[in-house]
Length: 149
Image (tube, rainbow, N blue to C red):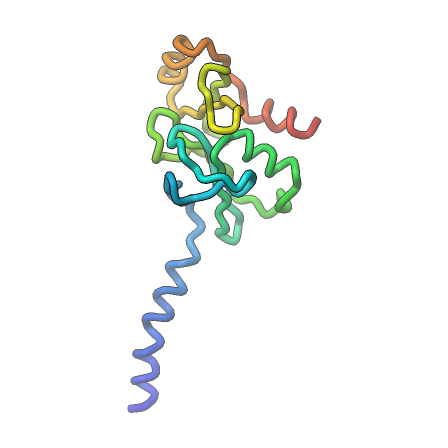
């Protein structure tokens, strides 16, 4: 009887342990989460991103500028990165994989840290925003190249 009661006591611990090790991106909680680079509170739901490591650690950012600064500072080994995500400008609580994102750069976007880069999953929506903000499309690879210079 004692062994079975110990096993029953272990079940909640196992459930908590297994659910806390997610390898998926996390929702950015506006006003609660802080940027992993500048440490400021994340306050604008239209900008930002995340870096997800292979072990499931999530680094959240309030601006693409901070995400790039984090990468440039070699805060974590790039080999440990599983995926990088951008906030979807048109659907703020949805994240887009960096490799699939369509990026728009415009000084008229006014992102929190002045990166002024927005992510989109749809080219038509990006073009519509670009026409009102006088923006220019930029690729993730171009941003990374500028970071390494």
